[in-house]
Image (cartoon, rainbow, N blue to C red; front, side, top):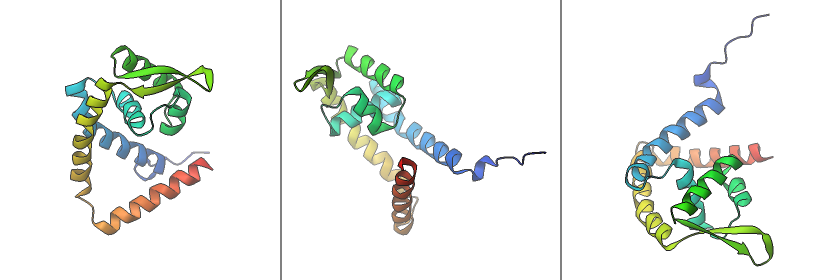
Length: 146
């Protein structure tokens, strides 16, 4: 029995991954060259900028990234003085992560640039398409989490 080819250009997981990687790479130009941050390191900083005090486990859940990748990124950011670990008062075994002052400065510089890059990319899509994309991504995320 011969299995028909997958046709990657029509396979949703491949298409989503490709689009995500291309968009991430485009925005990564903003923070890699100037700030020396990897994509994973920036994602950790971006989440902590919005949700300070998360644990590494919570970051892994929020980003859907690999636990080891989040741990490595967080360790590198701690070593660079961009995030800090503090023992949680409610649980001494878990460390809460947050941006340091230096991390907040980097965050404040990257965010407007990332927003501009996003806006430049989204200019290619009409409003109806953007609305449909937003709805489709929300529904796909919900279905994948179920």
